[in-house]
Image (cartoon, rainbow, N blue to C red; front, side, top):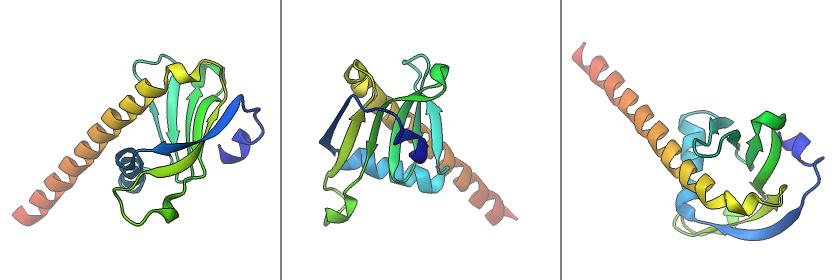
Length: 133
């Protein structure tokens, strides 16, 4: 996705601040679940979130994964502790992308929270089975 996204024209690009909770959640999910990680945004019909270490992208799967919005250039090395927010670049590829931003971030939090909880439950079950042997 990284090489392809640089060839697509950007409607708008700006520096933004990501909440540390969201950034940390994604980093944990990428380590524990899968990297890259892709999931549907349930309330946003044909949109998917694709998460990688250096790039988060919302794509429209009905249009051959054309990006709608992306975050990249995460400046996480500048922070001194995990509770500090992250500066990054936000790219807009569609004129109405701002309308889905809040729903997409909310879905990111809920879905990754559920996936991580399920992963933790599976690990706990495996440990319990191992101990009971």
